[in-house]
Length: 309
Image (cartoon, rainbow, N blue to C red; front, side, top):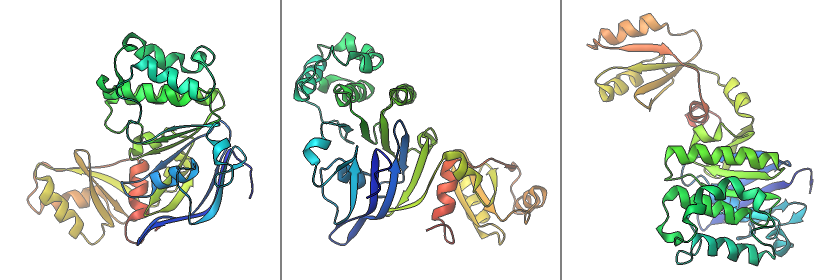
């Protein structure tokens, strides 16, 4: 195996009966890199993370973390990684302080020894250190779980959808924390269904049905968007969606926030002509304008018929 990164995976396969959860996944992640894996529920993100943290075995393929084989050296690996599973998994009946002290003890360290690493996170929950973990808000639970995952100063941090169900302010704070961890040289592998978050990573893997469709820097993925992209708005959005999809020059159309995003081959459709076409169908309040693609647009282009999968 080529151990050129802190995380290395080669040809990983994993199935559960008839479901192929992970199919031929290969990648590396280097020291201090934030690598995001994004895709919908069922894409295989959690299965891949669980293989890499040695909780389940791959059917075939190989993987290493910090130079250690996830199959042979699983005990040693667990002392070098931090892991936040998708569900809050700390002890609900223990206080914030007791949870943190417990995890420090498990890894033969102390809160004081590595406090500098969690200081910015723990300060926000320290006023509630006597409160039971089960009584914390979603954002506070997230910060406690991250503190417990970092208390032994891991080389690699695995995060499985850590901001799902968390308020927008806490999500922003969380990403600021990750940027600080990067400065400490900690490698972060984060699985997220939020594609706007994935754009904050150094690199992103776009995943669907167990396959990495593309893995690259966010700006590179966006620069490879091959279609022309327009946003369209009218008061009757549902009927508008159906009418746009019937247009012979439209490749795809999907709802995006309060507009529809439609793709066409470059140069084949002029905004004024398309707007007049929709006005001719009875739309009086139509708006059509070009937009710059984001990661979600790129993902949808790759997964659409004739795309990258």
